[in-house]
Amino acid sequence: QVVLPTATELAVPTAVPPTNVPPTAVPTNPPTATSEPVAESQPYYVEEFDVVPDNWYFEILAGNEEKTDISVANGSLTVTIEDYDTYAYVFYEDYTYEDVYLEASAANRGSNDNMITLVCRYSDSGFYEVNIGNDGLYDIYAYVEAMNTGYRRLYNGGSKHINIGMKRNTFAMSCEGKEIKLWVNGVLERTVEDNTYNLPEGKIGIGVSSFNSTPVIIDFDYVYIDVP
Image 1 (cartoon, rainbow, N blue to C red):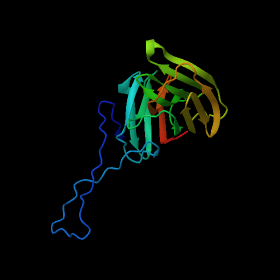
Image 2: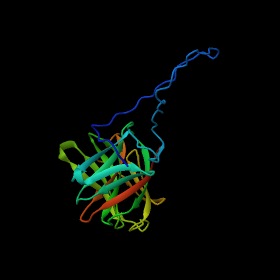
Image 3: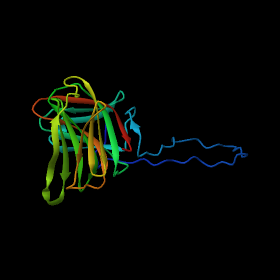
Image 4: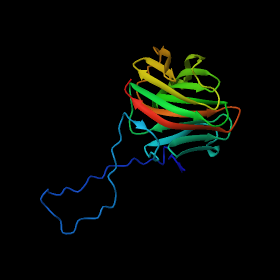
């Protein structure tokens, strides 16, 4: 089990190019490889957490960081929260997006009093997020930094498609122009249009929140990033 880096600890790897050797040349003393080339990151791909991704980082936006564990093991990213009212997020560092589709598969292994979050256009200006509760309810928010605007709810409702309890769900959101969409287990649940805040671009991320019951334990099997 290996813990992800925080934003301040993050180090993005660079690719190591192979030594160029002419096709006909046979070196007498070939150099010994000291490291494998590192693949370049991609804006659109599936992160399956088979290894610890060092271009993802976590932030605790509210609550007790000392009682929050975010780690990668056995092909899953696991968020464990052992205190109340804690909001933990994990962000993909390498790219910012204007329009993007984000999907995540998540399994609940702890308290049913929790919320799973998907985020797009995360920047110093703010972000959009969808919050899906284990009680079958959901919210769509804009968070705006300007003039301490804070969270502004764009929509809230309930879904019969959310698997409640110790179950697995696949949630997805997209930000495309002024539209924010939410999918629950393959069903397009809601589309809202933001004509007020117009947040331009930023990173994508996922999150988990605790409320009045612990421990909250969520396994993410994958995160899929694509064009909308």
